[in-house]
Amino acid sequence: MNKDKKNLWRKMKRFRSIYLLLLPVLIYFVVFSYYPLILGIVKSFQEVKLLGNSEFVGLENYKTVFTNSQYHQAFINSLIVGGGTFVFQFVWGLVVALVLNEIRVKILRSAFQTVTFIPYLLSWSVVGGLWITILSPTGMINGFLRLLEGAAYTPVAFMAEAGFARTIMIFTGSWKGAGYFAALFMASIVSIDGSLYEAARIDGASRIQQIRYITVPVIVPTMKVVAVLSVMGILRNFDQIFVMMNATISDKVKNLLYLIYEQGILKFNVGEATAAATVVLVATLLITQAVRKLLHYDAIYE
Amino acid sequence: MKKRGKLSNHLKGGWAVLFIVLALITAVTMFLPMWEVFVVGTSSTLDSSSAGLKLWWHEFSLEGFEYVFRVTKLAKPFLNSLFVTTTGTVIQVLLAALAGYVLIQKELPFRNAISSFIMLTMMVPGDLTLISVYQLNKQLHLLNSYQGLILNGLISGFSIMMMRNYFQTVPYTLEEAARIDGSGEFGIFARIYMPISLPGLATVFFMEYVARWNSIMLPATLVTDESLYTLPVMLKAMIMSTESTSGTSVAPDNAIMAAIIITTVPLLLIYVFAQKFLLNGISMGAVKE
Image (cartoon, rainbow over all chains, first blue to last red; front, side, top):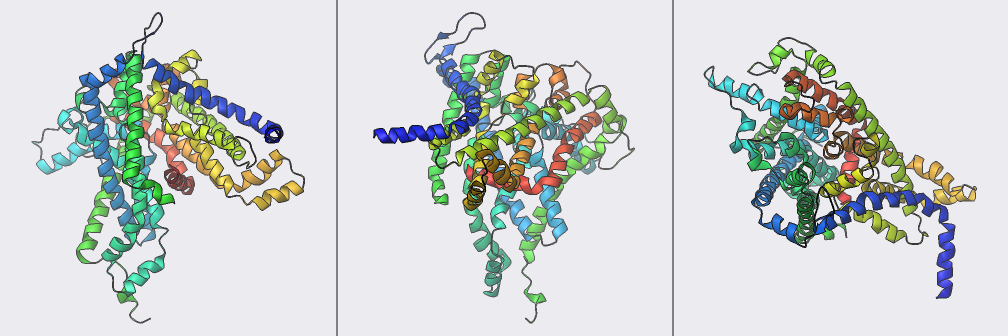
């Protein structure tokens, strides 16, 4: 026993320089990851005052978060926009991947992949600015509608109509992310051995049957990964709303993360905001675990 | 061997039509908005604000670019973004490589504990600790400073784990040979592991570069001084002209589109020259989660 300890000590001494090397990294994580996390949880039990000391108020902040209607609304908005985006983006990404796999002309194939993937690389400032302009009264959508309806057409300010707001967020979110999902699906599709298709063809399977019985089953594990990844993100969409929201549509699209930012950073309601953030964090972890279980996710890598 | 042509393995009939229609709809939906950005960004201010479709130039003009450099003064945010992103990414990749190398030392006592300590930071997304990150930066006097923009998110558990995974694939015999030749620990790291893992380094570098270049939430929270704005924050301020901190008038469409083009060009370059690394990193990232 004592000898083991001595051994360990000697080993640790041998790795002295390595520990030293790692020290800045570990300190960084303590300061920039663990400290904010703990600070946030502590603050969530406090009433933080601009002047003077904060005082502990127990579960008061959590009570506010669970009873206040603006948090309810933000939660509903997060679910509708986040969930809607996930479903639409998932289906669209799948379509892109399957279509891509059927394009045999090399130039067309890489053009299609590029044009679907580029939006994923762009910042939300770019995508938001782009769609706000395209949906504006002088933008492209109104331009097409005018073409269809003639000179008597009165332009619609799409971004200022509460009725369109969620649809627009879901659509633009999917527009940005479909190529990303497609790239993930493609990563498993390209691993398919070409001779499988060949064999199926010789057995008389039509191409659509090959897609159904060879391509799709190969992507299923990736679909599960993608589902888990996205579920973790559903409650955490900030950038899009930060860029695209305006006063007329805020009731429909302001989500939890934006509300937390608004309360915590702009209005100094630190206690309430950190309580809400903690709730979102716990909810995210729980939902992710549940989805993992549901999809038997962990079995994929065994 | 016979009738090769007849055995072509393509979709037929209705399915073929469906796939072609889906491909066309997707291509048009993805491409047209980006094309319009390009056309409007290089059109005159008058043309860009007129109603109707703008899918081709009425008159080619660089007024929009002139506007963003003269009125919005976009050169500063561009340089800010370039500086903050490049510095942060380079440091991040180096530190990730060092930490990743440490984590593959099989004999290292407490290796698993250190690993878990780092991996645990990946469970808590940064955007959920934003409020306390803001307060931390306030305490450290990092608000409105380049240091703050670089330091936040400087080291990520994700990059470290990516590098560790790359290093793990390096055959041990190489290391052994170098050891016999008398290489020290650092020599082995610098001369064996780093060169072999260049694709891994590139993957982490480009993934991180894109993410940093695009980030909005942190820079928008940490910086209120307009001279420190990064491109996405400036662009956001241009779009939301009613809240414009500069008090400038509403930016015309061609100026916003010009700013979008400027923000996008570096990413397009990365896509063109480093596509392989990006796609690789994306699928690795997803698998690892």
